[in-house]
Length: 212
Image (spheres, rainbow, N blue to C red):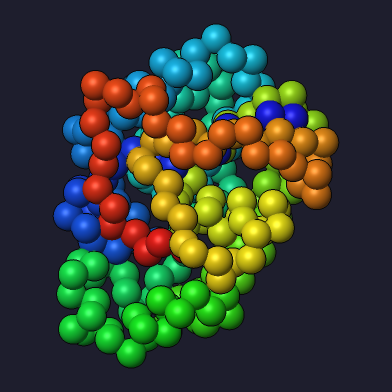
């Protein structure tokens, strides 16, 4: 199977540099909508058999634009939701050092088992993300699209490729495409990481989420 993993389009939280986590941001920003349209154009014509998405609205709106272009329905899986960032949620990244200095320092050590107070650890996130992708692989599609979140996708991709979670964090841009290929979730090859060439002329989004 070939799996196209796509981070949702930009939201106002991304543009502000505000941590989203599982906050259910109602809509994409105007830039996020344009990014999603450009991504739909990049996928047009591919023999995609299924579109999966996190149920959070920023992912669902992105997936809806892609699914319409591909002529597919959206299948949701709550395991594809972003990391629960607990006490970091809804805060500006610039304010975390002042408001949550201790927990932020612990998070920045890269410890995969550090649980954000009130939230999740990298290990917990990667475990449920891997379960979600394993279920998609088991469905037997030739090609599928997954629309989810930066933290979820990075931790899951690291895990299935055998990259330690504590390795330097990666960041996926809004509406980037990361392509995986393999016979099952235990035998996966990375074909493309954070592809954004289709966004040329559209624009790149902000950050707004914790790098994992």
